[in-house]
Length: 415
Image (cartoon, rainbow, N blue to C red; front, side):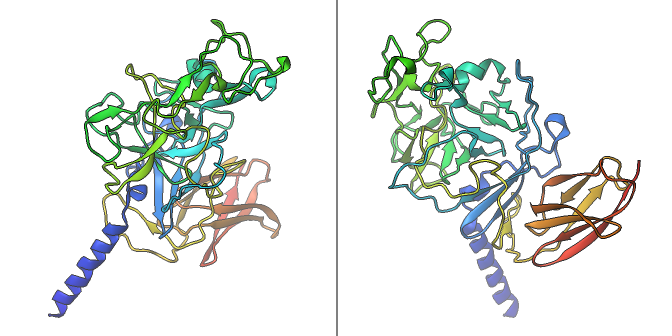
């Protein structure tokens, strides 16, 4: 009898765990084999943790597919060691819409950054006519339609064609990412009707090319002074080269001003607001590509703005394993890490095991007890470089601490 009771309790526990495993937890391409991508950097998502309210995605920003070269682009893709936070309960923003700004605006399911349609430049630097990244930088995209920016952050402004089969027009596209308001991003194909009925169709943007011969007005009808005119429309700057060459025409496509719609999907049978990437029948990207100028929902802090994407985890979490539905919520964990090379010359690297605690603070001291460096908010499944090149030969001590535990590692610096 006792064994039957225990078995029933265990079965209930399994069911409860499975009930928690919703798409924002399970839709990620997690690297479970130690595979590497560009420049031997660990690829795809390294770790997914979740709480009752949030999902934390640790990623290098390097995909598992081959990337590069980037013609005319001197930048190289580098490990970003991101920890993004996705809310599990996204909400419609019934106030002033949040602008989809520059830099990362969401995260593809393989841990690569989603960028908006722009390239951060404007005509004559007047901030009036904004350059379309696909037009101005597209020749430097690799075959997967991505490229790195100045800090080495590899990203896609447009449909990430190597992430899913964008030619499969007979099935509803999978979730291929999440925007930072917590709503899913799907590939190019959805149900014909928002209630989940009908066949499968390619989702059409409701942004249309404007019928203009000169760039002297904005899409909202604003008449510009001559000093704010855009360039002449010609073979060098054809229509479509600038964001303001497009205007939203409600009902002209399947998607709203945010480039999404509320609809039933295979992952959300009760319905969800979802963004869709937009392409034409020849699989070419169509403006606004992923999201419109503003988010549908509210956007929590931590993912956007300068130096963002390195969230602190201040709540107990469960580590999600794609081959298990029985993960247990661990309130506190030990600090589990490896450090190599040691002895070190110029650099040594700290790697925290996925089972390690979150929010680790590292402090480096010399043999006289002098504090040399502090690294805050280090997270599991992320590697950190410790630059020893400017220190003299000798013995150093790295203290790793959380609110729960601490450990000290000796480092020997050699020539």
